[in-house]
Image 1 (cartoon, rainbow, N blue to C red):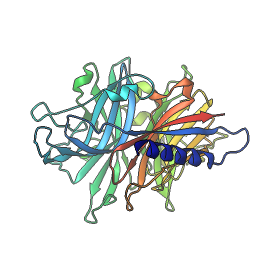
Image 2: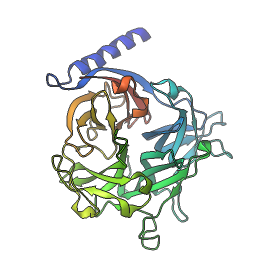
Image 3: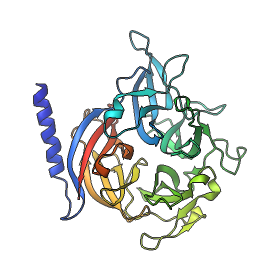
Image 4: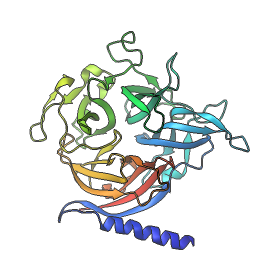
Length: 376
């Protein structure tokens, strides 16, 4: 029975790949393999996660998650003990799925359950959520930075019952990677006028931090940071850049104000221009330079549909165009939707020909991993 299921499931995936459209000579996807759910068999009481950002941190890979449900790891009945708004784990660095089989959640030493990485400030409670976004590790300073979105739950409840307030930035000393302690950073306007330490306010400007990446050019000193804003009902992508040694200074950020053919940058965020082709994603995504394709590769869910888009661009600022779509092969529950699609480029193999992507099924509430083989 099990072999029959595997055969049928594999045929479904092959049919899905075969049905993906691409032009002759255009890069695309030749194979998709389901590699199962990640991190479910843990000793930290974690019974569900979403988000699933990751970044290479020296000889480790650091993973971040949002809205985490916790069970008692010592109770015979696995009693529910609450939740945290974010948490994380470490795996060893490496290619493919091998590093993912050995992992350790950051835990509270008193309880043994997963602990929150991005902390609350005095007076805050769980009506405020802080969900991790893109991260970057500075090897010279051995310091790790993570952007996060602040949301406030509202009375409507349900998985979409929240209001986005903005995004912030937190940092931690990574010299002792097993004991990271993040601090939420205050932008230059100070805590008195900004008690939540919001860097970009969703009500007035695009919010940034949804992906962080670098150029393959060793002489390029910049980090590139993806942002977004809802425009006429469409989530529209924007781009910021900052010199790596100034990531903690909001006054050093520049915003893309040009076009893909004529790029330009400004410190005035009000002039920020959309990135051509980077659109229609539910805030979370990944962007990285893929050496096999010789292009920047963006991976994201298509809104809340059962699809992930793969798009490429010659420059960080575009223009992006879709080369393939990966369709989730099934819906585990009738009310489920898929979201949080992204690539984990530190796992890629064969120079980027084989990549690893995840998404979250809203009812399963775990990361689903795919091994994707590209073609050109």
